[in-house]
Image 1 (cartoon, rainbow, N blue to C red):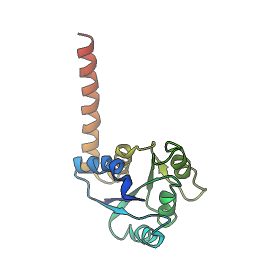
Image 2: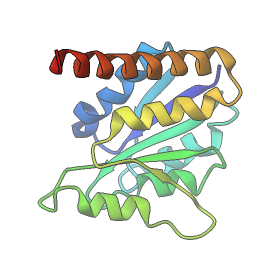
Image 3: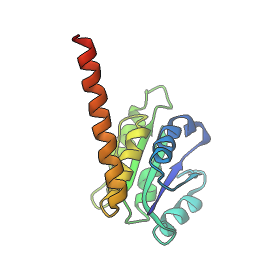
Length: 160
């Protein structure tokens, strides 16, 4: 199974990113997490992206707040799918990070989830890997069915 790379711009992003890590652990998906800044450690971030495919990664999740150039900087250096998590880290409530992450130029795509949407970033990363991993696809299908059943059970309790 391909690994998921998680890169956050600062250790202050970890409380949000932890939700992605928890999802990956729940599904037994291998991952590595790193702190590389697009601005403060650009060479390390670039090296990670350039070497990600040969190092066994299938997708990269990038989390950053404020200027939030990390996802784009990584995407510019790999053809692996990159999923950006805009982090609410400023007085603009994450809108600045959202716009920095989602507004990519043609030719350098970045999939973007909601502000602080780390759990969905992990699920999307797993769905990408599951395209070529039937076992993971089955786990994801089962999780969706279980979630649906839980909602219907709550509905049943509400109306009884």
